[in-house]
Image (cartoon, rainbow, N blue to C red; front, side, top):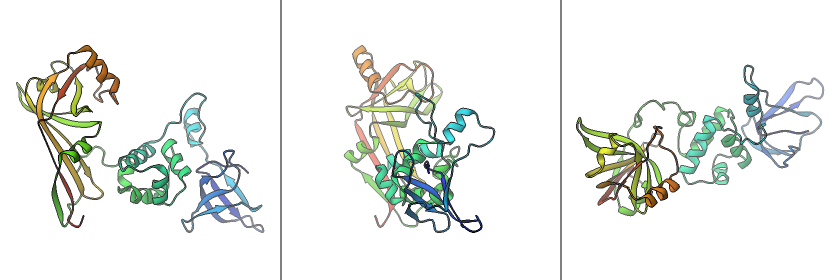
Amino acid sequence: MRAQLGDQLVVESPATGATRRDGEIVGLHHEDGTPPYDVRWSDTDEVTLVFPGPDAHVRHIEPRTGRTGEQADAASGRTAPGRAPDPGDVGRRIAAERKRQGLDRAEAARRARMAPEYLAYLEERPAEPSLATLIRLADALGTSVAALRGSGTDMPPGQGHALLHPQLEDLGPDECRARLSTHGVGRVAVSTPDGPAVMPVNYEVVDDTIVFRTAPGSAPAAAVGADVAFEVDHVDEAMSRGWSVLAVGPARVVTDPDEVRRLAGRAHTEPWAGGVREMWVSIRPRRLTGRRISPADQ
């Protein structure tokens, strides 16, 4: 008997062949897929270590009709030679939320009451976890099932209910720097010939300086030579919490070739907007402030 993560273990009645019990295999103990298995039973939602008997068999993941051969391989856990597995949208969101919470897989799996191997499978393969699994993961990661599924991605954040007893707290400079972190997406406020503009940009933090790439003549490029405001925030819809950090300081264009090469080498990602954006703009904050909304009892 051999299995892979996500397969079903089915226990049948020896007399009638009818299914007595079934569950999802969420943990493997041998690389070749031989028993024992960690099984999450469909009737109790509990995970137990199972040494299958003669009345048990594995029901393998079947690819859906209409998929290409490559998609079927992904669904069954197979990967084309020389290619890394391609995680699904849910898996990417699970992994991103886990990392944002500062959790390793072992701790996140413990909180979600699942095997670390199964969490790795969900994050790395185009899996389709059950609603019960998503509920446990959302609870463990402090988010919602809707967020893990990606619903509401085209809507502005902050549509959830406000806390009954919120507290608004000022953040110190060190906390502000920690939330700016090393990179992300922020907004730069500039004055243009057509009036004020607030533009989202991919940014990096290098030596306490905020830098981003843009194109000459673009709206973000209007920041050069002026004092500008740069803002980063985060809204936790599930918990009705959030924070924002505001940096104010002069913006300049980076012209030194060595500095440009250094910034390009440290960049975590290409600008999401695409196109040729080779003009680096730096903002050295003169003022760094932030606020956080949280429950009054925290």
